[in-house]
Image (cartoon, rainbow, N blue to C red; front, side, top):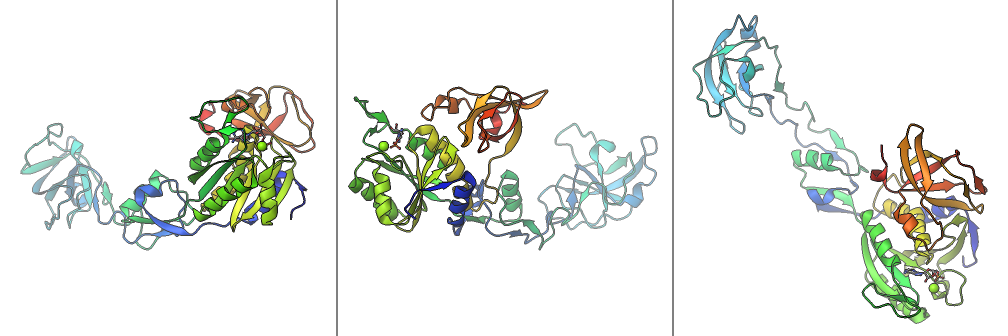
Length: 420
Ligand code: AMP
Ligand code: MG
């Protein structure tokens, strides 16, 4: 496995996804389940609504009593009860009777419909109005009107949310309504993030000649967190095998689920990450036919899946997008692993070197549909063109020239940035 292999993006991703597994499930409280993937189906223990109740503030009646009621032909009923939401009533609405009832209050026995208060002579704009002795009904209602029946939304025993669902606010609310307080979800991956290179200093340190700040670790930690993973910062390893090994061993002890490094996997004289991993024996070094990016290490270290990214900041981020993102999503239980994409008309000529290229671009929408403009220099050290981008345009392998007007697939890394 130690020889350098040439792989397409799809081949590399396939190998990676084959070798990362969905993490075990855990139970979390309702609100902590937001954005997580449900590990077991939610089956309703109760009906929802749990009991017949009123959909309006009004009067519970027997529909048979108000046949023919109208503005000019009101039906007068005797008011026998006042039923507030949350109350338990034992009253029965018999022929000729009505009960004042609030939205959500239990429908009394005998009644089979509700007349909205606006269709009565009660002065409904006044708060705190006393219960009238009689009520004048000014419209017809059919049996069942303005009544919410038990189980109308969800029947006890029904499958409500399937395993694999990504939990949104509406699922959280539905589970709350069903009394699900602890939610079985797949565990969030803990991802160890290691920077390597003698040139790197911490963000807070002063820059001295020859040094740059470690930006990759922060970008990658943010990428992990944006996916719902838990970044574990492993710091900066110097370009010595001892230091790299020490930091990786520390991560193994921290029980991370995935290890991600940047730099040191290329063919430079000081590419010590490669040297350390080579000796550990379980890592392959790939030349992926993509741009930016190319060198990629993948395998296991101490039994933990390991992804070694290139060092250049844009290459590191695009490689993460392409390989680490789907892996982390799979580990978290997600079934949809790719970014949403659109077909966009490119508004300028673009060149490529024949590798599958991921071009930083801004996609907007106009009368032609989705259109794309590149965001400036595509150098793998130029972060600002990634800052301006909301998409990566994919130029397929083998294509070296894309003429303006061509339609390409745009991977949307930032949907809210699209102007509609
Ligand atoms: P290497 O893969 O070690 O040859 O690094 C490629 C380029 O990426 C070099 O210019 C490095 O200085 C740069 N680089 C490596 N690691 C980082 C990092 N953590 N943050 C920013 N730039 C980095
Ligand atoms: Mg280096």
